[in-house]
Image (cartoon, rainbow, N blue to C red; front, side, top):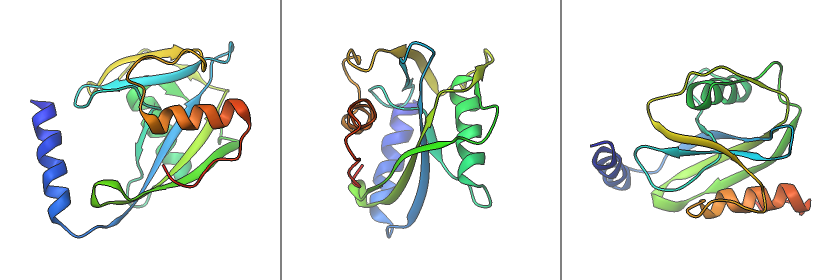
Length: 151
């Protein structure tokens, strides 16, 4: 049911004029340098946790809220590092995404019903189905190659 609603949303979104959206993603690292990825219930693949910034919400408030909602990860302070700012014009959108690098956090056990799975993976052993953009962001972080601007 969630997949059908997501597809309906995508079709509706294509019919309306594009609008500017801002999103946040977290490249969350554990003590061993593994990266947190999530699977959603409504779409296939593995992704960095994150989501849209709400009206009246700062980027830091958005990444804190999204991480806690999706994964139970709680940030103790303002993130100190941004990997990059990216743009995506796919699917008739004008999305702009800020990716934070987060290595200081704690975790409670709560997790959103929209998340089917959450795990930490070695950056060089990402699971099959990891989105291309997620793979690129992790590779940029690991290699130190300056990020591109396209999602």
